[in-house]
Image (cartoon, rainbow, N blue to C red; front, side):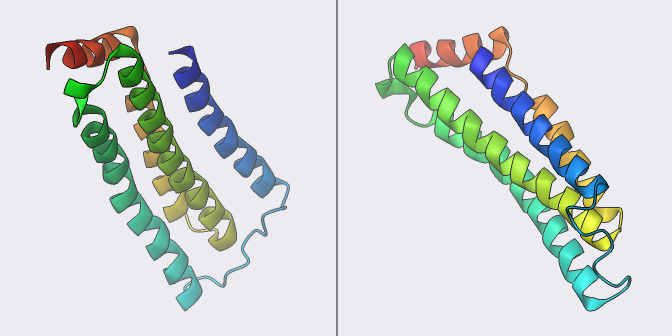
Length: 142
């Protein structure tokens, strides 16, 4: 469970590093002309990734950690839980990073809002002993 918490904190650190890169202008600030077609495309991609990616990440986790519980022992169940938790964190990380990059490239706050939604979703995914125990009980009861 500590590994899951570390992975979640790594997602936050990656996003913070991208923000730092934007602040020191490694990511070109305002590269896209305001109110242009390119700005529209950047914002559309970020919004679509947020709207599709976050529910997909949460749903994939649920589907893949509950589907074959009857044939898994506790060790296999914990491995499945960890793998799909990492996949979920990866999707949320990509969403947040792309949102931050879109903000710096376009200087439009749409990207920041999408990144914040993804980061707040990671807080929902914070692993607790109760969540893991409920998961293992589901493995044992099915």
